[in-house]
Image (cartoon, rainbow, N blue to C red; front, side, top):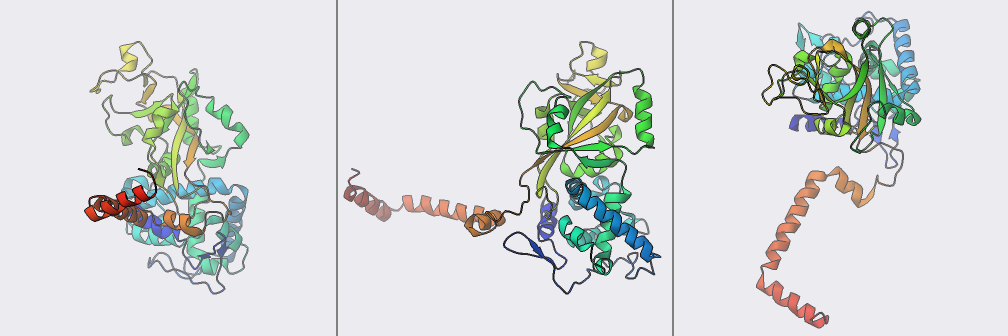
Length: 386
């Protein structure tokens, strides 16, 4: 967690020559510098990398179109990538890993993190993509964003209109009221997706149902691209498998708030829940079944699976359909909270805590002082409270 926060603080400054004004808008300096990563495979010239002007123009045009069409979905996908990059478990969480940061089969995570720190907020880079010299100034950023947002297009993440939220949440009727997500994103597969075709083939002749899966934020980059994998699950007390629930409130504790990206439109602190579609198959164990073969796994330590739980022992039976996102602070252009004492306290939480603790200790010490107590009683008498 300490490592993640260290990188997140650097991310929040939104470096690469971009300074924030007090009104929350960003200013692009006239003289721009390119951050060097030191990677031999990231050459300083387009010719060395075999990239033509036509290739660059296509990448810039495609990236600009995506950022304008669905900025929140692009922001979420990038935030999940950043969260996976900044965790100490990046070797398992950051899959797929950007190939341009792999040299001699070694992942240069430090160079990748430096590159991430230099990425400005996506609305800023979207505006800059209209400039003629954007690739010279932001070449590495463009290559990385293009890989994350466009190369990794299967599955495709897109924003859901707010008026559709209720119909999506009704796919799993809740018995216990719980806070609704701030945002919902649909996860759709490409037309020729092998995994989706395999799932459809398995679903023939079977009904399907929906359930929730909670996980830490840094896990969702790989979850979105590879699906929920049974072999990646740790053994639990009810047996090894993918755990889901018919109650959103049951899954929420498994998705604690995590730090995504400091420059995010969604806010830097978010949590994510997957709403999945499952095939009604014997390999899905369920707590609401009365049959031991369906409510108990062979390697279970605690006995039968609890009610409202499902345990999937075959990854091919489950597909992610939606991502439910809970945000702590959506970024806006409002300046109400951007200045003043309250904003200072929010930006210096640790120092605020230490100051509060010092004040508390001082208060306790003063109450034990006889001289202070004497003047306090004298004040009470003069004020007529006694």
